[in-house]
Image (cartoon, rainbow, N blue to C red; front, side, top):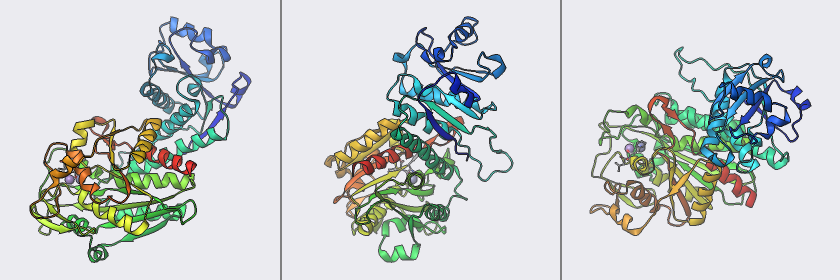
Length: 499
Ligand code: BES
Ligand code: MN
Ligand code: ZN
């Protein structure tokens, strides 16, 4: 993947244009709403284009003009933003950033001056962040396991310079955060898009080892025999149905005093979820290759941490396995003992995510004594019914932690919405044959899944992100989104800056 060089310019003049071959000019249809056009003496030209009916400035409309077709003798890309700034939303602003990239892709642009950051919408740092994140992220393409179908995009784009009044070191940090988050998302997307015959637990482990070598993280990987011996009866119950070796992948990033308790990220790594003996229906089962989206988010976030090196300590723990039906597989009604000592009646083998996460949560607390623990998982279909594909669910036992994550989601537009935990829901997990059942029935499926996890995080500040709806899009644009890497990176950087 090509890393675009992102820069800033605080005082645009006609002369400053000499350093660029392309100008991105944001245009509102209201006259007097386009100060940047004035700076470059382009107002009459833009008016004439609108009068001629070649450009209307409606949202996301782009017009690419070659250098010899413009008064500046520079390639000019107009991006429509609708009537005026009061009508703009975060969604439409971000869509404009993506529309600009799409227009750029088919040009020979190398060095771009981008005026989208100059309009008066949200804060200057928000605009710089979103432009960096979404431009770099737009360069993502899936090229693994190609059989000749995929050829890498050949866009030439090298640098993008944002016009912004705030040209200070804080702004440079924001650009770095946006770019590193996008680079992390690319890894997350690649892993989730990769089919499960390539992206196995061993492959996830290999990816973590590569990250550790590149960025100097500590790495530790647990194997099946060891985990059986340690008493991870719940995780190992899921893994016993597959001959593919399960792994517990542990990464540690030390960015500050090693005595300081780390923040722990735990990600569900089911590299393929058939449902097990409680087999899933065939339709769209292929998509269950992304059931390691939580694991991929942990790895993507670690990649961003490696790039940004914030001053805090973070551990990442990934229980990775397939969930398969076989002669060795767990069966409905089987009872297992988790690492915590609590027993679980497995009423549905398709509720496997919580079975592997509970042991990972216990192991993480025992091994690293973290200050807080955040788990992320494509945990429930019910989450998609509740919140759809735009907003992730968050639940937790510590409102400060939940609020901090909600805020990080707002800033990055990688949004979360809190669902409640409550004793009444916990009671739905009652079992006649063990400490708890692994399902609570159809109502409130996302909540009962979280109530199950809450039983393993009683002594620590904990938040759970259900990303079943947001880590992936179905339909013609089928594929991984790289979410919620931006939220986690923002959360961790904020924590680092406050300590
Ligand atoms: N991986 C699935 C959840 C899922 C479904 C993620 C669709 C993404 C898209 C999870 O392991 C699962 O199967 N959950 C069950 C739980 C049920 C048996 C209580 C579900 O949601 O149906
Ligand atoms: Mn399942
Ligand atoms: Zn699953």
